[in-house]
Image (cartoon, rainbow, N blue to C red):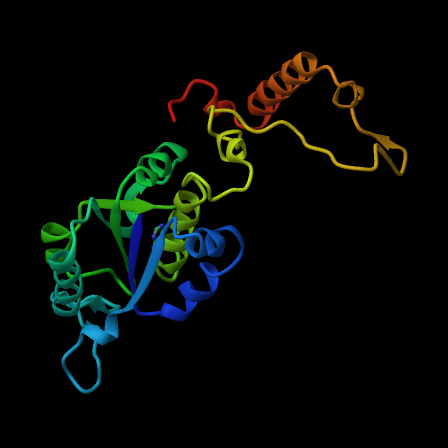
Length: 227
Ligand code: ADE
């Protein structure tokens, strides 16, 4: 898989995507993440990426020209399955959407900024608009990092234990059961006996019951929803 991210703040993404599992996935060749500085696609000496909006509102709008240049340049080199724009207007990211994106070959993520992008970019180039929740961020970089993280960890081989990405909270529409490690007793608090029993049928049953109970209590909205 290849993920091209277009941004005016490349440093913000470099840091977020060069640690831990996401770094390892790149080192193993499971994914290539390429960060493009939008200013490299400008043609004026000041490397301008935004301008005042027509109709006179507060805030700046990202220029169409450098974005078209960057995206069309990438598309002339390879096929892309999705050109994503991060925006609070988009569909809310879900595990189902991350699963879907993880099965694609190449994707572009354009990070929104300022008041947004010239609408012609959205009409002509963008195939999917994704929000990471109903709140407003300063820019789309953190949203792009969240999308990339949630997708890359699903790639086969990204997580040491193959089964662990599938047993995440949300993969079965339920929150994950509680987990414990050694010692079996800590400050008088004991790990549930069933986990120490070695009876895996009982352990699975306990985990499922806990997952149901936690979901019903903490996120009842998930109980009857689709991924
Ligand atoms: N840009 C600003 N806010 C955002 C959000 N909630 N999700 C995605 N991109 C954004």
